[in-house]
Length: 137
Image (cartoon, rainbow, N blue to C red; front, top):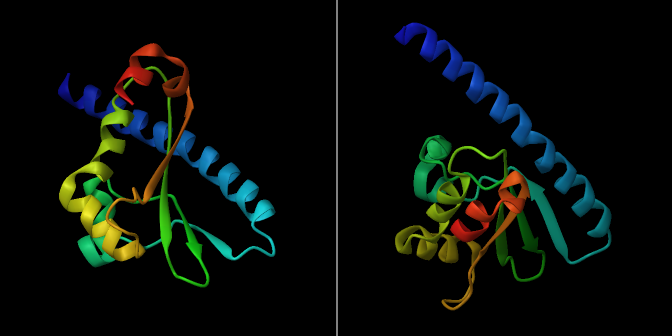
């Protein structure tokens, strides 16, 4: 019984990961279109948090999907894209960016001022339409 449960879980995780990549790719295509000849660079799958977690940062659930970086000032804003059906807790994972220690580290890495929240979230799919998730967000 436990083995069957674990096999299903692995399949579920693979499917969820595959579904999550699509909005990230769409976001990247749209941003590249609008950022042509702009002082803002858009970078997919940035390595911004290596200074905090090293190469294994994604195991903590803190791996931004995108970064906007101003070419002149080097200031950045990290973007986390969450797509989910009406299951799970992606809104809780997204909140990890707001913990005081991580937020201060991100401000330092992104060259942002103390009052600036250097993270943007993009919520898509059912997480953006179900009242339960909107309240959690």
